[in-house]
Length: 142
Image (tube, rainbow, N blue to C red; front, side):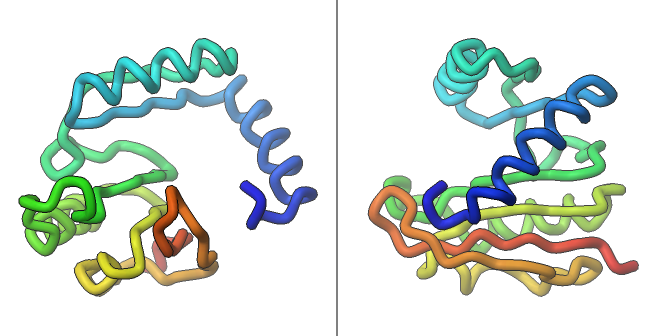
């Protein structure tokens, strides 16, 4: 993450190591192949993360913090981004999540619905896989 301040990245790593002792990290994706790759990456990095196949538009999102990388409509051109983003963020509103971190390509940002009850507290402009993208950090306010 060359765009992320090194000292903050180090602090986040230490925080996650401490949290790993107290909490549980879970990851899921609708694509089984992506889940297999994520498991392999986690094992190589010695991270204790549970992975499963699931749909973030429908599953109950039971987490304190959620990090998501939704499709941008670049490689999956036939996807209904407006519908996908509306369904995911609708599901997120029903959750008890206190913080959301998500990345989206600049051209896909227009599909992100109003974030209420979340408020953007930080954002980063990044180059992600040769795409202009934004990383958004938002906290629940209501």
